[in-house]
Length: 298
Image (cartoon, rainbow, N blue to C red; front, top):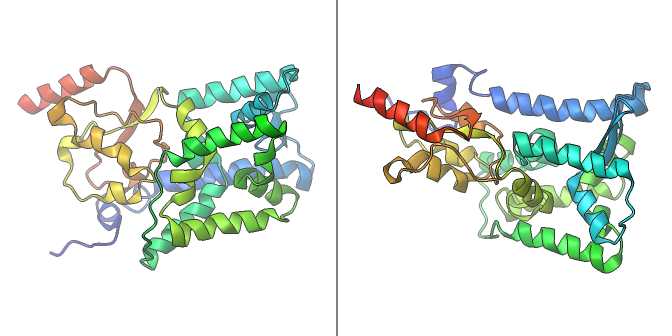
């Protein structure tokens, strides 16, 4: 029987539609729920969260400050920052340090929905481009954002930050932000595959650095079952992080995806018909590998 070449078709056939889309659907639910919590106040007068993704307060008690905004404030020279802003940044930093910094990118950021849609269209209509942007560009962008704050004494990047503009626009009404978001969409659609989130966005760079040592990781403990279908590479927004964990057994490499660039989106788990991947912890790697080895030798 000829193998269905549609991405994910084998996973759907093997695991069922829900398990082949579980983490994708949960991510969309998370993104919509976060936005819904912010909208409850202005639309229904139920203020569970006040503010926006840059700065907010949960239940009028717990402050939350985006680390990107916090660093820009520091770089701009405002050393007499309010205690609540410092505490809020510490809370957000600690949360994403534990769960994986780029969980923000895949589970919270509203721009992710825009760029994922652009990626879906690229694949659907086989749009290809010759543009190649190095993934380290985002780190240079982060440095430039902080340098701009230092030079101007303002959070100048927030005037064009697609994440902030889209989130505020969805809550308070889109203005010029719609053009910025459209530009990101067209950039990902025609110029560079997953260009914004995977290569350019300075927030992605910062959150990747925050979550570089986080305990919650995607693991490839069942990598011996891999049939080299390559579908995990096709759907992963950061495919370069997969190979060391998936193909590193002969080199004694850990089955854990250790790179901070991983977004913990779970699409590799969804798409794999052989259930090679799963969420787990980064620790006790040697113990887990030895258990796999004993099982194989038995």
